[in-house]
Amino acid sequence: MATATADAVRVARTPPGSLEQVAKLTRYQLREFLRSRRFLALTAIIVAIGAILTTVVAYFRSDLTGLVTNNLAFYGSFWAGGANLVIVLAAVFFGGDAIAGEFQNKTGYFLMGLPVRRSTVYVAKYIAALLASIAMLGLYLAILLGNGAYYLHASALPWQLGVSLVLALVYLGAVLGATFLFSSLFKTSAYGFVLTAILFLFGFTLIGDLVTGLVKIEPWMVISYAESTIGSMFASPINWGLTGSVSRMTIGMGRGAITTTTYTSGIAEGVVIMFVYLVGTAAAGLALFESEEFT
Amino acid sequence: MTPSLEAHGLTRRFGSFTALNSLDLTISGAKCVGFLGPNGAGKTTTLKLFTNMIYPSEGSCRINGIDVRTDRKRALADAGVLIESPEIYPSLTPNEALEMVADLRGVPASERRERIRTVLAEVKMEQWADQKVGRFSKGMKQRINIAATLVHDPEVLLLDEPSTGLDPRGMAEVRAIVRDLKQSRRLIFMSSHILSEVVDVCDEVALVDKGKLLFYDTLDNVTAKFAAGHGSVDVGLARPMSPEDVAGKIAPLAGVEKVLQLDPKRLRLRFQGGLDGQERLFDALAALRIGVISVAESESALEEVYLSQISRGD
Ligand SMILES: Nc1ncnc2c1ncn2[C@@H]1O[C@H](COP(=O)(O)OP(=O)(O)O)[C@@H](O)[C@H]1O
Ligand SMILES: [Mg+2]
Image (tube, rainbow over all chains, first blue to last red; front, side, top):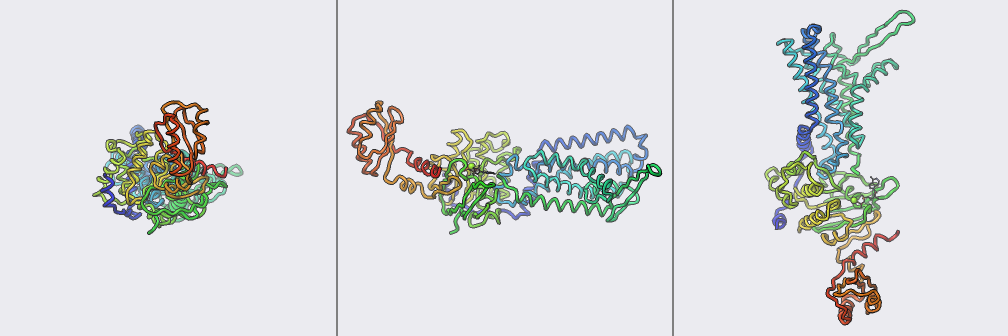
């Protein structure tokens, strides 16, 4: 009988160290993403965005002379404009139900039977979502570089693009951190999707505008404010600082005049804000997942 | 020797409702223990506490001496767990899912293929090894789940109603699989609300009801203790018997406590007097010449214990 031979040779297995388990689980999660319909859908969406961009540039090239001759202006508008959308979409697609889905689909019950820390599951899923999102961002960048190479010919890439790319990656980390936090707040996938999409597509911007308009202070507490550094990297002069710059514009004269105030985040300030979001949401999300029960 | 499973004052409340009430249980050695109780008794709650899926309100539990609350990773290292019906990522094949489990559990790469083949054979799913789990039926998924608990050949197996939710054939097959898993160096702790399943598969039984452990003992002891000289047999007859004859001829026989006519040709007799009483009863039955063609010990002895125990305090 099969069990008789098994009787003779049983060895207790020692699970790999937690870091090694994170690496292993990340690989398996990533394979899940690559096989998912979602990955395909998002790839299609980004290719579509890229196609629209290419068409717009081709069609309006005579009106956009400034854009298609100046590489700083070209990347400043098209990279900065699209990166936020791609990042938020990727976060929604790969992170929106990362934790909630484990509860809702009962796949978490399978993982919880294994000798892994809960934090291992959380971190591995986060890294996998991050890598999948970076792939999407890379795809968008590749389309952009293709257009750039065609219209701007072989002119050197602006160094600002490199810094902006790093800022975009930090922003992506923070957005995913928040998405994972939302995803662990609920045991139903849909809430995570909706909350992430609403907050990052316009919610935070709205909050930032309200803070500026009503309280009249710099909206440093809002992550979309930090996100604007991805675009302001291409402005001149660049504010590298830890405090935002203010510009006021007055429309009208005398008693009817309206003054609008606009804050622009300093680059260092933006990085700090994004890191605070990243660390804060990671800590909160981990603690939440640790306390959540698979009832 | 460190006990395989230990619960100390293990308590879990949901709001004001106590699902598990101060469970003290220590199980050592290689055997199959049935964790028996009706629906809602607290079985799943107990197993989820043992695997750190939920947390205790009070008390603690250990697997192989390791507190699951403080170190779930080490506590579960030499255990296999199947609670409710977990889902495997639907895009995985059994081979891939079990590869992941083996990898995360530290089964060396060189042995994985062989181990996976072995456990898939044990649950009779070899021919499905490379099909996507997402398309499997409930019963097939459950077998893969069972295979997943076995990949690392664990010392402790925790199974929560492994046959529940399956069709009768699936239930019988899962029971047969669990029976095959019994070996000289493994503890199987299996919950069930079906007495006959526990009798069929297990060596010992822990009975729970309303969150309380009522007793934990070997099946033999439980039967002996609660039967206490009482026995119960099913008698098959060649010819139908009228209820009047049953009342007039069978009921007055020495030692008979109760007669139940299961159908016109089948009687269930409850009697006292142990083996001697049983012998006298059979002689008397034969002397009646009523066409006795079979006498079998009825399964109702334990069932009576079960029913009488779980209805206490209602
Ligand atoms: N998450 C929960 N919230 C509230 N009550 C629960 C929860 N989980 C279980 N219970 C209650 O606890 C009792 C025991 O449940 P359970 O352990 O699942 O029983 P069993 O597995 O023995 O059928 C039941 O009455 C059930 O309703
Ligand atoms: Mg149950």
